[in-house]
Image (cartoon, rainbow over all chains, first blue to last red):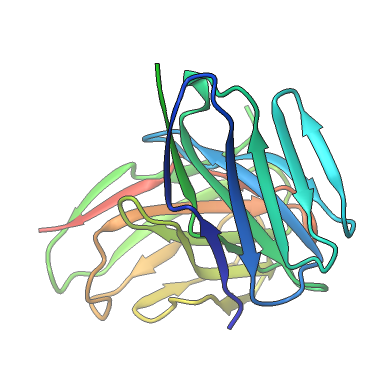
Length: 111
Length: 112
């Protein structure tokens, strides 16, 4: 079945350092979404990418969708303590409502 | 206030018992989902439903059952056949293909 892997599983950074998490799907995706889950909370939607090679930015966050639509990345510039949490990608294949979530990357920011 | 309501937030179950987790949404979304999250782990899809009276198995459906008799409701039953049910259960909904997934607050289930 469809699998979505993320690396790294954990990342500890000093405040102000950059952070990147990578998402890889075993199948071609129609779109990919990114979510953030704070400790003890539920996942919250960040962004959706649809087009091959698409790049979107939200303040310090940059999201990319690969040309083959099988991988994606989230880059945070100059991390802050408010960025702490687990970041998940979620992929869907064409014509289906089924979303498979990645394994997640847990980010810890040291002040 | 619109959103997804899950109940109960905390539930303890004795071994051999079935329990049902409630999920209600007032967002008029067509699709609803149940995910399981183990501590420090990712989200695994249990069941999803695209329309009333229809649902599909996810990756870990064994030991679980669902129903979708109403658009706004998608209850999950954790049966005694589920050997390791202690986990955090998240209900979600979306308007459809390519739509944002909205999550409830989650339900913590512990087997005692």
